[in-house]
Amino acid sequence: MPTDTSQRSTLNAQRSPKVIFGPISSRRFGKSLGVDLSPGKKQCNFDCLYCELDPVKTMGAYDEVVPVTEITAALKQALKEHGDIDFITLTANGEPTLYPYLSELVDEINTFKGRTKTLILSNASTINDPKVQEALLKLDEVKLSLDCATQVCLKKLDRAHSGIDVEEIKAGMLAFKKKYKGPLVIEILIVKTLNDSEEEIAKLNAFLLKLQPARIDIGTIDRPPAFNVKPVSYEKLLQISHLFDPSLPVYIASRKKADISASSYSVEEILETLSKRPLTEEDIEALFDEESQKRFKDLLKEEKIKLVESNGVKFYKKA
Ligand code: SF4
Image (cartoon, rainbow, N blue to C red; front, side, top):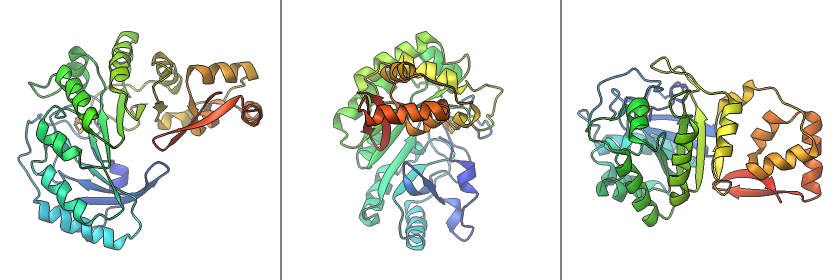
């Protein structure tokens, strides 16, 4: 999981070696500080075709490790500077769960974080490891990637380090979910021709129905990738979202929304669309033209549409 380079530009140069970045603000997480567990170089056990970091040889363990004391000192300093942080996000130039002292680090953070919440963004490759599960159980929120439900796809798209098996990832997710009290969010990044087939989505759907995560974010390539792979359109993401079981809280998390032009939807079409897939306010703004948005608001007043909240994201669905 690469750290967001646009977020990193706000890095305070005074701080200890680029371990902390942000804060950045988002609707979903409020004000969040990023912690980069591999600030010196990319250290990852995946070599995803869509990665925005330069490709490097995959590795099973970090060979460059920042001491826990250095990370916590930098984090304490940053928290002092910004008194109102909502989330501390553990991430890396690479995969944060490969950080060998993750459990100790989380224990330390939990001693001083107060009411600030903790979150990790992981590629899920190590989720079947009991030590990783032990560390993640102590976090307030966990977001795991799952681009593929099959080994063929994982090898092609995420180009995992040898020995990583998608069935073990899935088994690890199920075992973790049973024990975890916080929200487990799944992120799927869709890449044209690589994991956008109906077959692959059907397999992801079958697994996610078993897993029952708090939310499923589907997105596509938003930033220039390391290899020549292509994003899918917002319309395609919407189509893919309809392939998932309607009971699953699928959220289209893509900046591509801004690129599409809004269309006219009749009352029947609005209700039909919302019966297939709940939509967020952002989806509605992107898809519906002005007149259709008025129709939508009327339907909401008439209670033919209802608002539901799933792990911090508001969805509209047919009542
Ligand atoms: S998991 Fe994939 S996207 Fe994330 S840092 Fe590793 S190679 Fe890049």
